[in-house]
Image 1 (cartoon, one colour):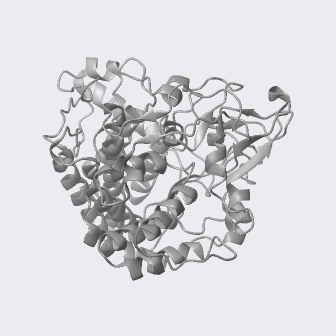
Image 2: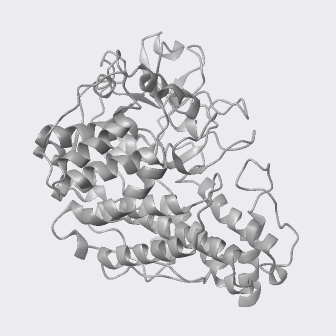
Length: 498
């Protein structure tokens, strides 16, 4: 019976490797293939690694869940750049307005989806020695290891403390690190978060040793892993390592030019993108619906509107291209035509589908790595280097800027660009506020979430969410795990203080 169950679970994973166009990461389906005969050929492993990437189309990542709980929206609604719009479907209302979540009402399904992706990667890795030694085997192994590390890092930063969050963060509650394939595993938490980060780094380094220098759209490359190592070390506060891994990426990969920003968010180019989940089929998730649905004043229905305070951080004269890519002002019929600022990165969709909201899930862009490098250089005492790195991005965003900042003004400029550039993608604003609490930056960045008090209309009027401040010491920075998962695994415990 147990053998049958294992075979069934493995087959279920194989059947999820959906067939679709050559432009997508999922190309062929092993439907009907006996599991015991799979994982034998290069073709089998090519299809299997695409099935690992397919896991990112699950709820919590890029599933276009109707609860506004996916990665491209959750961090933004937990923080302070968007405001709950009462004219929408009330999606994730309590999480976004008052941080009222617990094990019985979690704000995202990321936890369970993450371990499903990890299981896919581990299944492939458990069969990897069926391949002969060589470049192909190394590449597939490297990609699977990198996915495993990436997803564990995503779980760690969401459900546990980030190491720079507090003085005792490294010894705080860990997460399960699952580096083996067992569909019946009941993993327990690691001793602490330091153990978790040590394992994440090992997997990334092992991946780096196996990956070749080529890159394929929608697949992890050496540059992806180097950038992810830079992110990991930034979370650890090891700025020398951030510089070591970010520098070659910044040297080799150019950010998208300001003139091409709108085309980036129309799916017409992927300049500067280090890892994305492509959506090019008409039945692919419309990930933009987490923010809004519709494309005209008559049809637009907003779940979350951009806060007036955030919008006003942008300079209308010197960065019109970034403003146009990020925002669009509507006069919605369901709001009596009152001006409201919408998130525009996903509204128009991808021209390959011509369906509003269907756009690539851009998990990592070189712009983040540029900002990681600039921050690490500043915190290492190299202000000249930090300024030069920051200006790589600014020269691609502004028609003109003053620049030349030093001291506090420089780190504030770096953090401002981070907030503006990475909004509405993977929740960076939330994680930045979370991780800066024990870092040598101005006190203004250590206050937790402090919202503006504005309503959701463009002029700041409208309903104001009840929750305006989340203390930096609140346990709510670490999200709860759904109680069903706890009930099914006697070795697992709830996130601390829930």
